[in-house]
Amino acid sequence: MEHWRVLIVLGTARFLMVLVTSVMNVSVSRLVEDVDTEVTALQAVITWYAPVMAAFMIIGGVALAGFLVTPHLPTAPGRRPRQPDTGAPAEATGPTR
Image 1 (tube, one colour):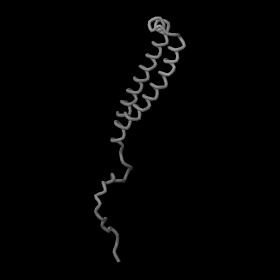
Image 2 (image 1 turned 135 degrees about the vertical axis):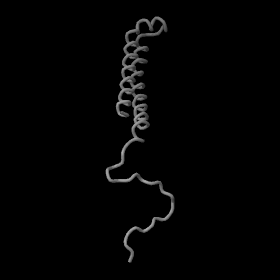
Image 3 (image 1 turned 180 degrees about the vertical axis):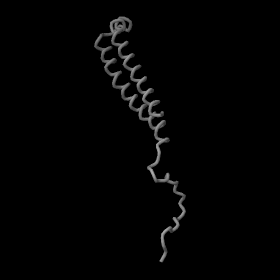
Image 4 (image 1 turned 90 degrees about the vertical axis):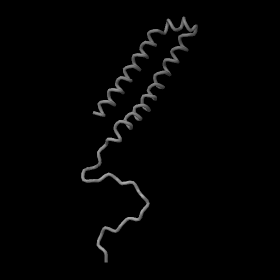
């Protein structure tokens, strides 16, 4: 279920990014009038917005996946989880001579 949660969050984030970019592209003419700037300057802002948001999505996706998925990964079959090192000398477990 954790994988689906990550997929739903990232899919929703991607949808919102596409939606916001589309709204900005549609409203270029109105923004040029309101901000009193040129179309090329506003298009440059919109062009840089997409890769910056994509970078934040990648960083957020990696962080979210690490937070939700990594603690729940099972160990390999037939293998016990690794115990923390206590610094004490290991006891001999094999035959002695």
